[in-house]
Image (tube, rainbow, N blue to C red; front, side, top):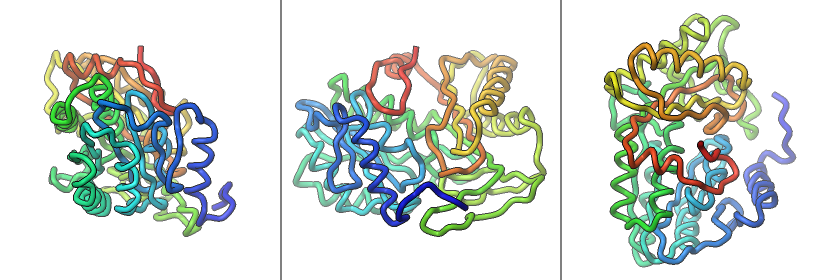
Length: 328
């Protein structure tokens, strides 16, 4: 598949350069693949560091800024960042009040972030949380971290910005993880620019249920269905796993995988609102768009976060990042 790239081997460093060049007042880069807040280190503030393979833009670097992440580390496309780069992010952003690593539940990410945490033991107090919101995987300990990750970024980031302690920020991050679930569907795979061919193929009338964010196939292949039926399938799996009950309140995230028009995402969002209303679940706020992608994959995911009063206030707290909207 054709790609608008120069050298596939340089695509990650060039995209980071493009991002920080556009936002010079709020972002800067170190070690080519690490983006940090321009004002780092921020005195007296717990630091949030996250990251993962590239190809999920705007995650993670697009969520660096006041009120969210202090630093993000980009690996090669769909490849975990190396421990030395993660350590560089910790060293550059640390203010001495503690560092929380927000890690998605993939073997390479978990291994490398934990190793960096050990290496940083003399730099600052470092803790981690592991996001595993993907209900397509039955065993909770094996679930992947997908679109719900950015809600951890937002809520824990706002808590850290308020001056909370590392223990308070970590406990809140864990509470968000316990209350968010996601599931995705795809109509196509995607093409890693360093490989040049789709990771898997689908027939004209097929869809892949339960995809992750690395272009991988899902857990089930089905005949293509209408938008409403697909949304109903995802909603039932997500809401049942979350154990939603009538009268509870949720934040809704309809996330495009990179190749789905906003028109189609809004059609899906319409059905989500209808299903919530039918079940007596209150919708606090929502977002629709491309937030955690898989290159140009055609598809979307649905995330539901059960919210409490503290989460609601932190979701509405102002932030200054390139990619997360200020909610009203």
